[in-house]
Each structure stands twice: as structure tokens, then as C-alpha cells.
Length: 144
Image (tube, rainbow, N blue to C red):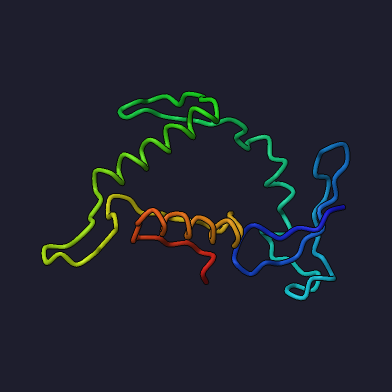
């Protein structure tokens, strides 16, 4: 058994995750959690299905522009593609100063949207990274 936090919202309910032979076999509320005191909502209680679903994607999928089929990519290839696009967009859309010479140091070329299946710490790191990269439009559910 390992203790964890439910990934579905920003509440942070405690979970006990039972693992056998490197497979999650059960997830239940953690009575020692001061947040949830052993209770989980329906989504949190069904977390084992989220982890073990035969429909869960295990590979990186990519559909090129105007493509009609998904292609499998290596994780490193996909990460390189994302990094190149973020860096390129930042360079193309960077606003260092406004017309009066006042500093802006920002980009409006991309926005970032986090979600409830990321935990608060992941959303926090995403916020910090993209703020440092100059993004202005950053939103995630973890702030609620």
C-alpha cells in the first residue's frame, strides 16, 4: 500500500493505493487524511478504473496537420516537437518593449491550460515555467 492524492481536482483527498505485482488492485480513501478523512467522491473512488482501463492510451499519439489518422511517436520525438514549437513561437511572438519603450517581456503567442487530472504541484510547476517563459494566458483548475 502506498499513500497518494486523488488526481481529479484541487481538493487533494487522500488515497490508499494497493499494489500487487506492479499493478494497482484497489484504491480507497485514506482515513488519516486531514482533508478527506477517508471519503472519496465517485470519481476518486473509481480511480482504479482510470489506471487499469484497457482503453487507456499507453503510447504517444500524433495527428499531423490535415491528417486523418493518428500516428504513434516515440516519447522523446514528441517532447522535442513540443519544445521546438514552444521555443519557436516564443521567439516569433516575443514583445520586449511597448511603443513607448516600457518593458513588457512577454509573449501572447501561446496559452497554457492545466487540468484536474494534474495535481496541484504539477500545475504549480507548469505555471512557474510558463510565467518564466513570458506567457500571459495561464489557467488551471488547481488554483480553485
